[in-house]
Structure formats: structure tokens, C-alpha cells
Amino acid sequence: ESPLHSILVTSACKGEGKSTPLVNLACAIAAAGKRVVVVDTDLRNPSLQRILGLKHSVGVTSVLAGEATLDEAIKPSGHPGLTILPSGPIPPNPAELLHSQRMKEMIKDLEGRYDLVIFDSPPTLLVADAMLLGGELDAAIIVAESGGVSRRAVQQVKESLQLSKTRILGVILNKVFLTAGAYYNYYSYYKYSQTP
Image (cartoon, rainbow, N blue to C red; front, side, top):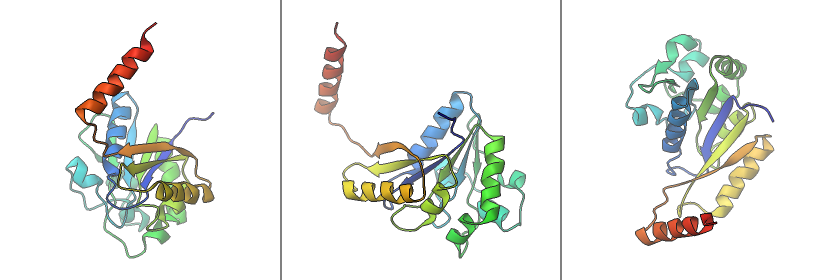
């Protein structure tokens, strides 16, 4: 009903690989001609710089602490149309920073500059950061590791985000490994279902 300007990407537990589908999603949207920025708000264990092969010491925490401007912190990613706002130095008080007035102002500023702002956050069941951030954004996507996380855990993430009035777009099932037979059966079903 209304265009999305900001999306949170989170998971239930650590190690589900949420940052990789986040980057793939951002690259695909940027390739479609949109201006996209990914923001690393996993202030406890940032990984976006590593995935994108970048090294920057200035980022979100630098801006929130008043040590850098947003223009100084935003960096090119190496992919056309996609920029990155790294996490910056790891702070002693991540939840407090993410729940600050400065963070709300930063979100509004980024939404005004880009077609889409995608936020990487810590796992929802470990810390409250995702809930604090999700309530300020348009929607959230949950990444769930296939065979590595229980349905109950994903349900708990959904309930936690809904408590903060976060709209959930859906779930990305990550680390799915199909055998050759499973792929063939799916293809056969698809082909059969398309037959007039």
C-alpha cells in the first residue's frame, strides 16, 4: 500500500548467515536501477565489510557519537548503485545508540537520500537491538537457516518483532542444499504443472 524505504534483516540465532542474503538482495535491487545503501547495525559483531571485501574504520557509531558526518561515513561498495554505511568502532552500549534520537534522525536522513535502506542487525533472540531498530523502519525480513533453527525460534522472532510493531515481509530460508533428485523432482513438477 505504501513504498518501502527501509528494511531490517535479522535472524533468530547467530551463524544463520543472514548478511550474505542481505548483500545479494541489495545488489539485485541496485542492479535494477535503484539507489541502495546497506547499513551495518550489527554493532556487536559486524560482518558486511568482510563480505564486501572492504575496510573502513568510520561508520554508524562514529556518526552517532558526533565524530564523523554521514557523508564521511558512507562508502562505495564496488557494486553500481550500492553504497555501504559500515558499523564503525564497536561501542560499549549498542542498544542505547540504536535507540537514540540521533539514530532516528540518521534513519530519516538515509531514507531521504536513497530508494532503499537495508539494515543488518544482530540476531533477535540474543539481544534487543533488532526490536529497537525494527520499530523505526518500514519492514523486516527474517533469515532462517534450513535445518539449523527450529520453527519455534522463528516464531519467537516473529512475535518479538510484532511487539515492536514491525511489519514482517517474509522469511528467507538460507543454506538450503538440494540433492540432484530433489531438484529433478521439482523441475518435473513445475514442467507438469505448466502443461496446458
